Image (cartoon, rainbow, N blue to C red):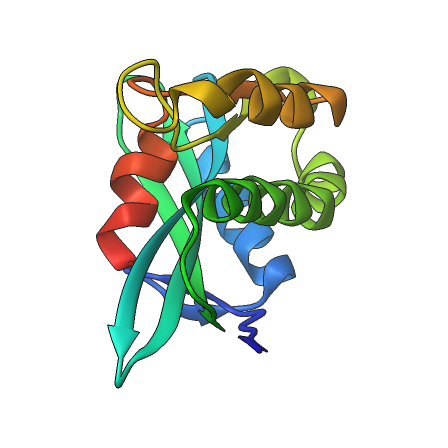
Length: 166
């Protein structure tokens, strides 16, 4: 059973829908239009047992980073009542990031010239640790969908920003 939240939260603006997130990103880019930006989507998860029931919180973050001059981010959380299995969690994180990209990228392209930013999906897997065997698979999922993939230690969108809210 999945409890979905289609709204994003901004630490500086509050609760926003997808179009409002894009407006905020466009406003941020418009403040310094000569600069270059990086737009990142990343998802992280945290598992817990509550009264013997497995539950996983998934947090997806959208970050707009002004190279060398700050960033803004937006996040949303979804709860899944399920026993945590690492491989399944990593696939779900990646799928959630891809679904968010499919929702947001067309809106982003309407609002901001693609020449102004790089777009990346950050995946919470790395060459060291239990997720190392999944790198090729999840990077392939992201690249096969037409996006640039970053893994640890460069996947700060998932491992730092999204992680802050799990």
